[in-house]
Length: 96
Figure (cartoon, helix red, strand yellow):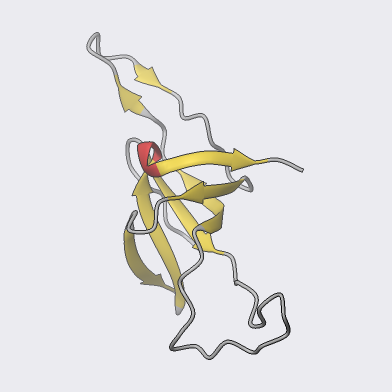
């Protein structure tokens, strides 16, 4: 993928959710909610503060993150679905 986000934007790929419930019931695609967990693919250089300095982002490529249900803009790059969102839309990094 040759795409570099600008400023404080982040490219995230949604991680697939389970197709079965805990009880073993298979959930059809129409009833599934979109996962709110993803992997960071690319990050921008950072936002500028009041003094004009670039402030680096806290997330980096490869991080697993949790984001809001309606966060970001869905785009298709090289035939794959991604989300482009601001770093502030990310709620946290999942470690481990």
